[in-house]
Picture (cartoon, rainbow, N blue to C red):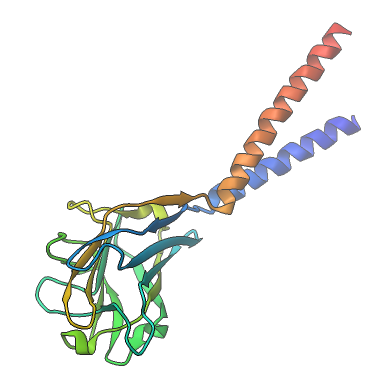
Length: 225
């Protein structure tokens, strides 16, 4: 009876862990390393990381942003361009952003903010969500630095919810190298690393299969005896 009770509670605990892991809504870590557009293909890397069931961190690591002569920066050029844009599957209602870099979205020449009202990035099509800036147009008003912000959706958000638009672009940015400006897009999702909760579900699944096999083997032995 004692062995039976231990097995029973172990199974309940495993089930609880599985439910906990599943409820975390954890998407994998996605990275985008190759871009295309006016600038070279290696302007920087975008990484998506699940923070919790409603929040994803978006980190745009531009190549060589060290002062006093950084290589790339985010700009406004006017017309159908925005400093940064992307799409989300599902509703855009209840979506907000918290800026980590620059802190609060504020830099020397302007302030970044999230908008669900526009997201044009010619020639890479239209996006549902954009990161806009209050800065003036041109390289002289650019933000030369990496962009790091967290997107939250009240109804839930996963890294898998960041999807390509009709032009097959996941992200687009309006960039400058100090002289030349132009749109850049990231179209290839190059890697996916499972989150800890995903590994937990896999391990518990293997445990469950092994336990069931062991139990059936024991029952067969008892019948033969």
